[in-house]
Image 1 (cartoon, rainbow, N blue to C red):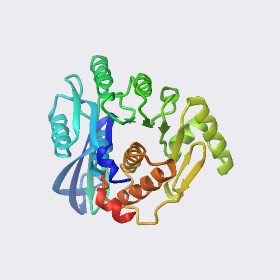
Image 2: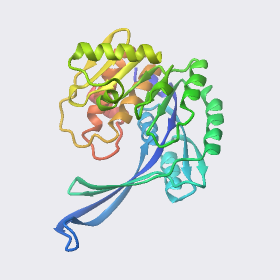
Image 3: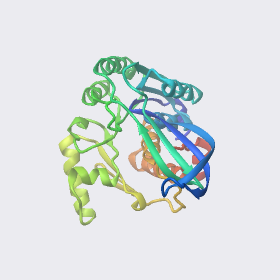
Image 4: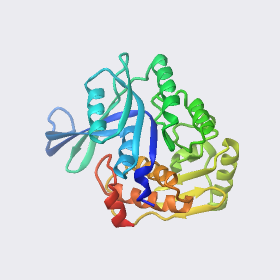
Length: 307
C-alpha cells in the first residue's frame, strides 16, 4: 500500500502558520519577576497548521499541493521557502493587510516555557480568489484535506466541500469550534475527544459514544467519523466501528499529532486502503510523531520500520 502512496495527489487547504522555536539554557530566575531567564542558543523554523499537514503527506511520498493565505512579510516568505524545500506545490495567496500567523515557542531544558501567537484574519477579497484557485486545483487531485484552525482561512469551507464532492473527490476535515453544520457532506471529519464533546456533549460509556457518533454522521451526511482519544487510542465510526489502541511509548510532545493522523489517513484512503487499514497506519504514524519535539513528521522509512 505504501508503494502506491507516491502516485497519490493530495490537496491541502487551510490556515498555515510558521512555528518558531527558540531553544536555550535556563540557569536562573529573573530579578525583575519570578520567571526563568532563557539564554537563547539556537532558533528553528518549521511549517505549522495546514502547512504541517502538507509536510506530513509529502514526507510519506504523496504528491502534495497546498492552498492558503499569508501576509506580505518575512514570515510569509519563510513559509514559502520551507514549503519549496519540502517539495510542496504551494499556492500562497498574499494579503498585504494581514500578518502571517506565527507561533513562537520558547524552550528551555526540553520544556516549553512560553508560547506567543501573532495573527490577523484574512480579507474577503483574498478568500474569494483562493476559492477560485481551489476550483481549478480540485480536478488535479485524488483527495482533499480541509485543515480548519479557526483562523478565518476556511470561510468558504461549505462551498469547497460541495465543489470537491461534485468532482467525486474524498474530503477529510480537521474541525474547529462547535458549529459543524458547515462540514456537512464531507467524507470524514477527525475531531479529538475534547472537540467532539463540545458538539455532542459528554458520554458515559462506549454505547453512548457510538450512538452520538451515529447521529452526528446522519445529521452531517458523513461516511465516517474518526475520533482521536489520546491515551484511549482512536475510534473510527463508519458502517462498522474500528478501534485502534494507543501506541505504548513515551509521549514527548503531542503538538501536530492530529496533522499526522489526517495526512496519513488521506494518503492511505487515496491509495486504496480500507478504513480499518488506514486508521491502523495513521495510529502508528501518530505514535511515532508524539515521541518527537514540536511539530514533526513521520518519514516513510520510519513508518515502514514501525509497521
